[in-house]
Image (cartoon, rainbow, N blue to C red):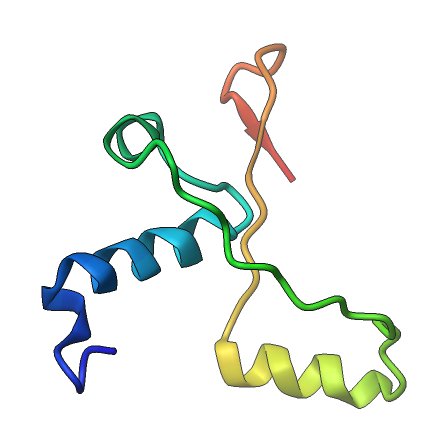
Length: 82
C-alpha cells in the first residue's frame, strides 16, 4: 500500500484502520470514535500450532535476542514479576 501511495487516500486509510482493528488489541478509543463503521479484516485460522522441532524455539530466540514478559502485580513493592 505504501509503495503504491494508497495510504494517502481515504480508502487506503480505511484499509489500514481495518487491519489495525483485527490486531490483538484492536482499535484505541480515539480511532473507534473517528472511524465508527470500521469492520475488522478477517484473521486466518491457524489450525496447527504445535512446535514440531524443539530447535525451532532455540533458533527463534537466538535470532531475536530475547523474550520479555512483564506482568503487573500491585501486591509486590516493585509492581512487576516474571
